[in-house]
Image (cartoon, rainbow, N blue to C red; front, top):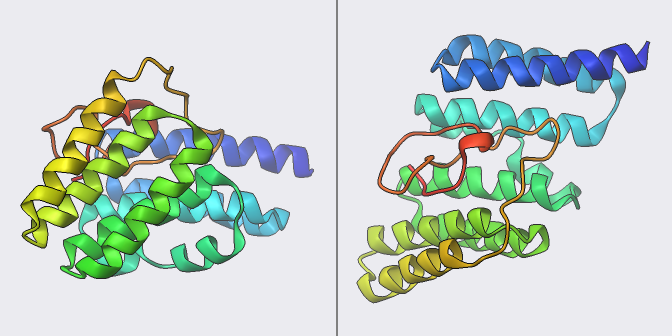
Length: 194
């Protein structure tokens, strides 16, 4: 029975990714919420954390910023998986930045950057440098922002191979290409913050 639920969780996550990519936000929320219920039923904390991050990504897309924060701080306290910690910290920083809570946003963006060091994927690191640069720009720290944007560029020029997203986690927190806004699933995720 639990194997069937794990398969169903994976199917729902894939469906939710597709819905998010097609900007079917309400349907994606329903789909990821169902995946979250399955994770609860399985009593699998890692799947639950992943489902929470996936729900957060959709809510960020919709501009439901305070709702997108739900559960992310708990994940940061409990999870040791660098992919999950990255997603939770990145989404939290993004939501806080968009609300003008810049000091806290900077704290969580730097937490995402530290987690990306453990993932060893230059696309994820580049997105952190871009987010930190955006926060510095919002704070009117132009020199610091430019330094972060330069670090982002350097990460893109780094010859290391970008990794695919971890199974069952949709990191829909970045744009597919530099200069484009919006949030996309991780399979397109290699760029900047909204």
